[in-house]
Image (cartoon, rainbow, N blue to C red; front, side, top):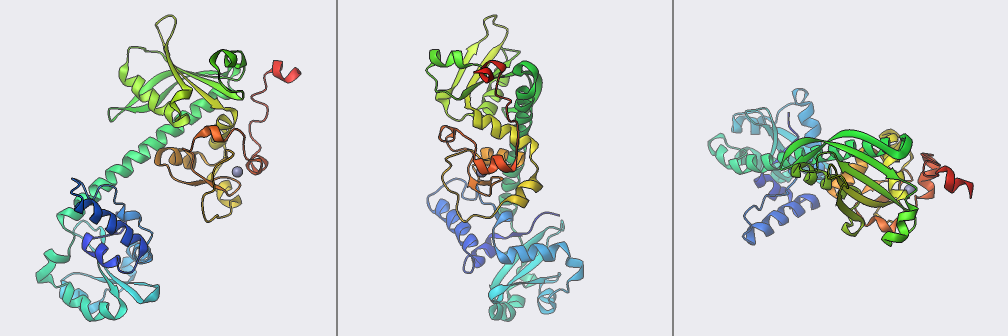
Length: 357
Ligand SMILES: [Zn+2]
């Protein structure tokens, strides 16, 4: 069974009572008024932060134990469930022919009870049952969700590969990772090197100190789809194009993408692959608003990947909120609170030479 969604008609009614619904409705309406071809694009109605919809989700999960609303069900010719939320708000929940739940009517308590049976008449069911446009909006939303999930899992796999390179002897690992190229999942053969002793290159390249060289080479330099997929992955780790170089291997047998990353960023990625969501949840304190990111925080692998892919705020181990897509150059060190909570990979960047001085 799918998550509860409001029909567009019910969304408009909900907009009178709920900020989230109002925002969604206004946005769609603005796009429609501006003549945009796809006014429903980006509407995420299955995830609206709305109390009635949350309450409807609970009821839909246990609907067999809930008594249908008698008068409304009789009028509608199918079971209608009454959904309650604080402040006297009420909504009508039905299940469509495929068994998926929809909120089809929302009103204040008094309006609901005086109107629900009249509004949901069987003879006018084409007015209030989910319409084609509701199903189209749902299909689009599901497609976007699916694509985001795939992207997140690709980034996670790439994190794992980078982590392996960091802990591998010589800092190099040969691997095969999935990526997307032209909407197709494609495995690419890579050699990943994290060079912690690339200081000698720094002067030459004019790079700042404290940057590490991530050299990812493609073993098939002629494969343009693989190149595209590889760039996509590297861009998540280093969105600043001025810190990414491309070159053909000297032997023309490889294609290299070199990204300069701060040590802190690499530490963040490695920490993300070893931390557990449970740990993050347990130690984090909710913060009201995400502060500017002056340091890099450790967080869970999934959260970090989601943040990078969706540009969403995530919570670090220390409890601070941050958006990992922010320019990474502003975070050259790891947050000391995070480091205290998650003692990871200390010393992996200290080569014997640099340690002796
Ligand atoms: Zn932190």
